[in-house]
Length: 440
Image (cartoon, helix red, strand yellow):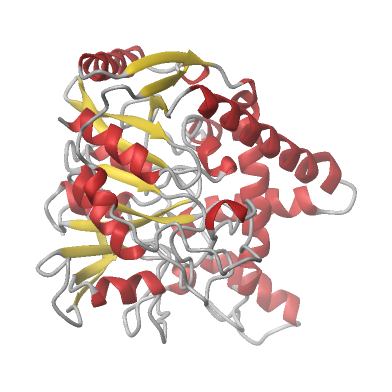
């Protein structure tokens, strides 16, 4: 396909009539599909075919959806442009010379380009919201524990959530209604307010927050009386064209009866550093299984096991994945664990506390989704640090395990700009309602 939005084409029909009957859905290629190749965008898993469906895929089929393919992505979710994919970059349908964002770039490009009606992505530090913003579509990162992670090939377990991408807020919310809910196979399912930030709730007799959900019904556009907290710290350093478009969208919300207040989160200055230490550390642990014996390309039989292990990973992993494994392993190593990983977890707690305090002052919080317009293909690969800093507005949400949505706010120089709305824990209805008002 012209956009290179899919790694593998498929035609998986729904099991029955349901709320998604007739809808074509693209599934990010790190979500298991029984009998259909699942590569995670990596040469390491070029020929891996899972023997089971992820829970979200089971729910798609039960809802009548037709899965049309496995969407292109940055290798193992590591990237913000889809350019680290072993299968070549996806293109942005708005301007094919530009990146579609990442790591769920193929998912967003498929929806924006009309190759799918809906899509699933996964969001570790913005990987649903980033491509949604760059491609001019809607992307939701749910509260951690709202959607089952069973069958997701994880990049960073404590941060990552599967989320929907669609052309409208209501469609994205309807897809969230289908995929959310408890799952006994997923240890990160959370129940109510008693659940901890990083694990399953012990008192699982409580109802799951999505048990009787109707997120789509919340897309009523009614923001009269809603207080929106504008995170001023995340406007500094953003592209002026992005800020102007963001401010215009806020002005429209005020005209619809919303009130805006300025809020400041001192901790976000350290969020990107904390995020990358935690994410890379978890990635170095998660990717240890890809050794050419249990999973991945074989390293051959010459020499000892360490030689074969090294050959498998040298051939199977791309440069960005190797970089993150090395940095994560270093951060976890003896003598450096307290200096880096423990400090990053302390910063994470600080970020969470700041968000809780800000959400005491406002119903939802607002920032531009991305501080820049979509870069041209090849423009950002030479400077990994700049690529990491591009995530400044999205990663704090994952550290705090909160829900967020990216909704198109308008255009600057003909390119899409996304507005991000952040809600309290399990406050998906609040962000859906506010986002639908932006859309109107």
